[in-house]
Length: 523
Image (cartoon, rainbow, N blue to C red; front, side):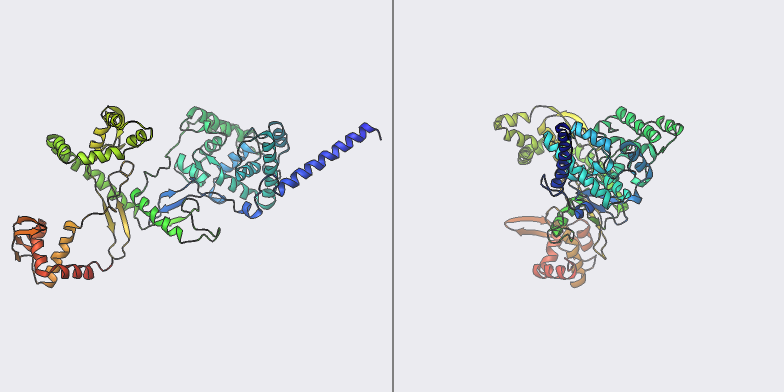
């Protein structure tokens, strides 16, 4: 054998051996950890925990990544066909690796994000690879191919499609369910063909996001529709595609936002309770404590969505009227109020503001910080309009005054038989005012009086017409004079003098003991 021929054969078999060695080494994790078969069957993905009302409506989510999973039979065939036609028309024929795609990968070494078979794209998602040098990208490609082959060997095509659609990113969303809910307010099974084409088109890049880039989104949608004609499966005829491409790009975009949704104040309180619950409960799948933001919990609450809507409607209807009355009073003595008793409130408001904190971190002298609060700037403030905000120009100190003068409210609706909370309103607007007035600590005050009057009727033989004397009351070095009246009058007008006389007659210790044991025993 000629030396040149011998050299060619040695080179050929050495190359084959090197490739075999390379794949074997990668499979055993010498170039980085490879996921096991168990991990491939249950790939780690951060799943959002979902909160539901008692009547089955999704109230909101807790998440690190906004991701929810669906099953294959919950996905519209329109999405599946559009995906196959656009990303991998030979998906049902190959075993995870496309020879042409392999050739491209050797040339570009992973710099091109598209063109790989669906299974290989899924493998790349599972590896969560970052960018690196040529050698690292080459090793990453080898690992992708190995995982792709394992996926094809152990999963059906339907399972691979489902895994892919549950993990794929759509802008700030993960998974087809969140994408379809965000852009069309639909479940994946209900997507029509042009909607499916919009979402599949976004997989190529965020530049085709239909809300921010409607022109590019429309072009990409029509490209996907045309590929459904040109692919080997011919999912559409040309006349069908032309009719679809002639339609305008329509979305119903609503971004996931913790500030909106059903009962946001309640959800905020609930999250604290659930975090404590997670600390004491183990996830049987991982052996670790549950993670509220990653374990995809389903949380069913007692909130009634209709009652919650009525509650928030009542706030939105009534509070602007109350606020208008206060504003009329403030026109006459508002400045006097801030001069006499509001200086400390303004000082605290300034120092708790983001403006003060940011300038303080930049080591700006306090004198200059205070001066900045007197310079008018453009800003948004809360307003009782449809948007719940308004653009205006005012000084930061005036904005603090403005928001401090807004009336707040709160209430809870509860089933007295079961203790179930049916609705929860913690303030006038969760986006602007996170402080929950339901959970705020406050003095018992006049809330205690009806219980005291009830005790007087039950134990002391009083009736609504019983006269209770008034007079001067001295407590803690302070004296007040109040008129008496009937029991009914005292309750209706919340008369402190009447309540004081009743407690003096019954006895403070006995009053407290009897009320707690008889009326508040459930606490």
